Amino acid sequence: DAKTTQPTSMDCAEGRAANLPCNHSTISGNEYVYWYRQIHSQGPQYIIHGLKNNETNEMASLIITEDRKSSTLILPHATLRDTAVYYCIVSALYGTASKLTFGTGTRLQVTL
Amino acid sequence: GAVVSQHPSRVICKSGTSVKIECRSLDFQATTMFWYRQFPKQSLMLMATSNEGSKATYEQGVEKDKFLINHASLTLSTLTVTSAHPEDSSFYICSARDRTSGFYEQYFGPGTRLTVT
Image 1 (cartoon, helix red, strand yellow):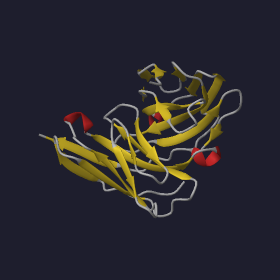
Image 2 (image 1 turned 180 degrees about the vertical axis):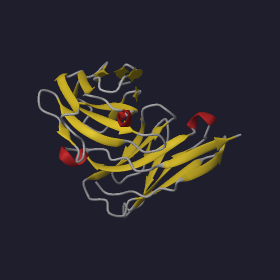
Image 3 (image 1 turned 135 degrees about the horizontal axis):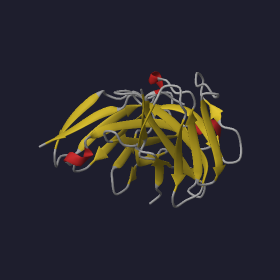
């Protein structure tokens, strides 16, 4: 799996948009970008994934650059419950390369 | 939505004993389940990949004779930590891939905190 680079931590005011960047410059053509988050002492929660087009769901938006070497997860209106560690992972869809390898992630702190 | 459960949520055992942790997919069938371990303030580390009806594939450095994995059905995988020692104390998390969802998503259980005394 391609490696990813994320900032160690970020702060965001409640109600504002949280923009979490991720670099994945060695991503392969068949690898997707996944975002998961882990709230303290819980299992990770799936947020969103994408291949090359921007994606949006009820939780977040995912913006992937045209060259696919980086992406940004956007939480449009962050709340205190969004405080968590956010993991950006690149992984193929099938086969042995489809494992999710977690890096160190970004610790997002949402404040009042 | 897809739900994965783990049992027990917490377990304390004495050094030298064995502990079994169950991972169940409650509302979907999972051909593949994964087992992770997470030490305090660290990220998740994949231990092994478990496919229904076949032997698990262990990551490098994970002792397969110490961490026994059984994926006997499409909804149940078990991890047995044999002859547990204090250094095995950790947060164990399983995940499952829905065979009908196109393999896009893995659903994670809530985790099991193991303390070996």
